[in-house]
Length: 95
Image 1 (cartoon, helix red, strand yellow):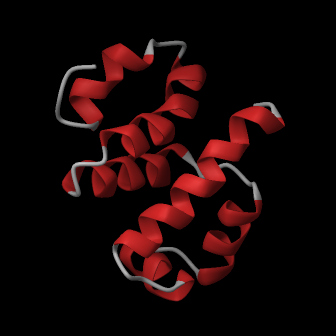
Image 2: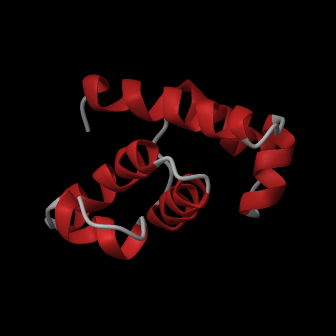
């Protein structure tokens, strides 16, 4: 994944966390991971597919389908599946 692909991801994670009014520790607890992982994601590391799915679900729960698409983009790359095919499953609505 290129750095250009990561820029929206970094902002999306922080925006989602703030939307839920969570600290990095709070988001980590919500996702079942440690705070250092959230710090790394916000610094540019790409979360594992399981975490990306949880983040996509959190975004969809708040009606932020734009953020949901950002989180499923790396999943679509790894699975070699179009985002539009994954969006109804992971975000709860069609593209």
